[in-house]
Length: 338
Image 1 (cartoon, rainbow, N blue to C red):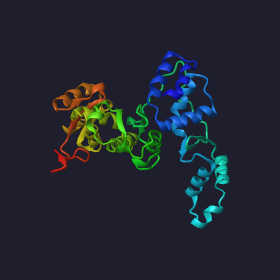
Image 2: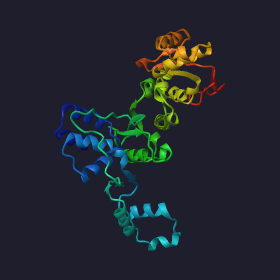
Image 3: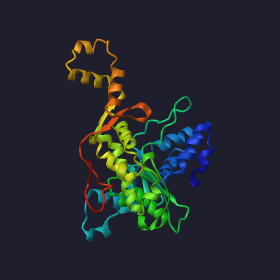
Image 4: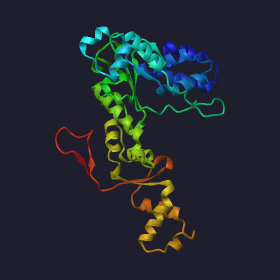
């Protein structure tokens, strides 16, 4: 956090400074570049302004260019392929300046941070409004190297479309650590947004494997079953039902949610009504209000073996569909769990 310690001295409420201290503690190298560029563009004057800046870090793009010449090569490489013999005659420096004119930003270290085209809406309005949640991540890792024994943070997933080992997040972390590969790093600390994922430090011998699984979890959480209603609640209930305590098992469960029947709390009355219809009870009586549908549903679910999820979000039970293991499949033998 060192280079941003001064931000903790800005005027603000105690809870704002506490939020900043916790968030800055795990700020990744990638995020640090963007926050530095944004702070230079608009120096924050209050803790609330820093909170908004951090919440909008994803609005900036980072390009691998530490000079106008490199920026010109990058921008031209995005649009066209030039014959090798032409390259000595190309004014890449000027092309980089032209790119900057159309995509304002700032050089930070070996990168060019491109600012958002439109100012982002504030995520936090200050006193009287709740502090934002830091929830758009899956796994945070503190990685170290012989050159940087105190380590740097890596935040997953990275949405730049690259494979995990080539993503901007990983590339910048490796550059800061002065190593070439994730396997050259030592894992000092690991956090997962899912408590049910257990102690990641005990589960992985390979940093690369952990980064890949963390990236996959991030995309799964972001997609939320392609917008399926109550997906997150059902996933949490399935983790609880199975007694999940590893990241790999959590990934398998996420891919097998069709193996569970889920009744959300706001669907209790309809669950009871559906059961009554199967017995031929008239719709008029069902809808009359003379039957306590909610209590009837709760009793029916309990006697049918459903588990009530923590937080009373709903009820869940396993069905007979095949549970396909991809992440926790044994090296030998079958790939399924009945």
